[in-house]
Figure (cartoon, rainbow, N blue to C red):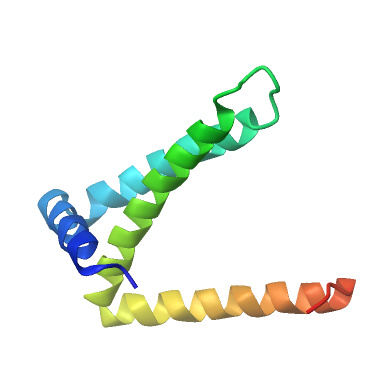
Length: 102
């Protein structure tokens, strides 16, 4: 659940910029997060963890905007929930196969 004040700010940004622009922004932020993940393995990068956390925060904010958008589109929300449940079931089945503890 997104706190009310955060949801208000994120909804304003989403509706100001529009879904497509914010979806592209999500792609950009995910790319930056992916690069930050790889920098975690470089011992010479003392700021790598902070950079990773910053990019994770950016992705989180745009993902929250997508959640707000989903809440306004019943068909998209249903499809998202179905895909998420299917993926989670595959992860659970995999963990069972490899004997990961509960």
